[in-house]
Image 1 (cartoon, rainbow, N blue to C red):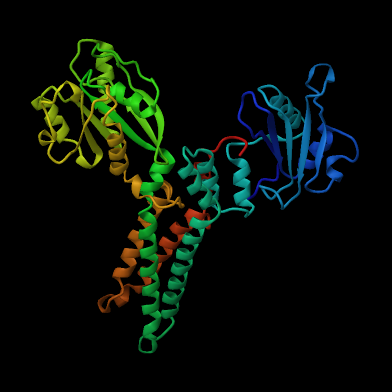
Image 2: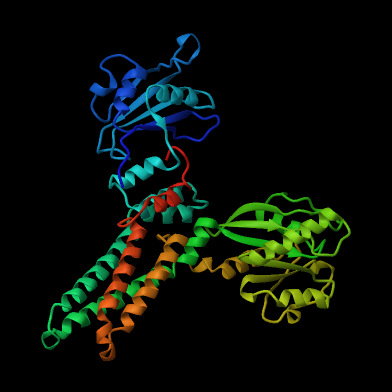
Length: 459
């Protein structure tokens, strides 16, 4: 792909009041643009060495009465020693909603164009500074919801996952080369070790891919968080449980059934993993249009939840319809909470065979620790190792395709399939090409667009 030769600029800091705001410029005209807009003592930026910090003012023709746009610090990075491996200028101005926009406007007037989402990181990839796995790690790090997620992203950014995939890629390339070389030998002169060595490499690659594939579930939880839905009939304590887990009175709690008529969602970090904790409307038939809509939303969330906490009043025997609905759920992704045990208990774990059942009195503050422990156990997050790089949904899809191609290739290597060696090599080459799209050894514009469009502008 042709690398763009124009110069881009964007605000690299979040909007709002802050100590400083940063405007970033990257491309061949960065230094000349800095010369045109920067007013300071001594030589202009283009005559300065890399790593120089300059204090001065930014000029802008669009400010009233030709006033300066802002007082700034200007930083100089010269190619290839910059984030993008291009000449880069970073301008630090005062934080706030206005100053950064005034600086950016001056930069654009001087010849730069607005950067697209993720374009700075995209240029870092195209210029060979990072691979696609590391580029994705940048976005993961920015969007990390917990320390664990941030640590996993940092490890990926440092190249841990890239090294694993590169090793597998090289293993498959060498196997393909040996198999192709075997085609040049007469059958009677073909060294048996050549094909056997290739087969062993492919089996090793398959084993390593299986290991990486097993990290997807953990990666899914770290990147996206787990959807944990609290459900049950009205007035069983769903909102009280939400407030107890959060440690704050987020949801309104009353004795009036049907107080919660819509979903209430809050982010909650438990044992280093982000959870999307959702309190839902009480599950019951209602003539109220608003409440019926809330119940429908509750059922939709229950169906897609990573974990459902189904709550019951321990003093009320569950009805047949309630138990039927529960039995349709996966016990591995469901926790039954019997609340209000302080009033007495007419139901027990025996009524819910196969399910994890916890008795609680949220009003008295009992059962919370057990519910937390059950959430951790059901999601499997207590078994997480120290933070490590994990594959994403994109990587999982590619690995599954590659494994299917590898399995088809390995089936060929038997005495009855010698005439299938050529198509097997072709299948293997297809697998190698697909694997290369993970790190960016192979890529196209559509792939890059899909990856970088989730980035913020300025990164």
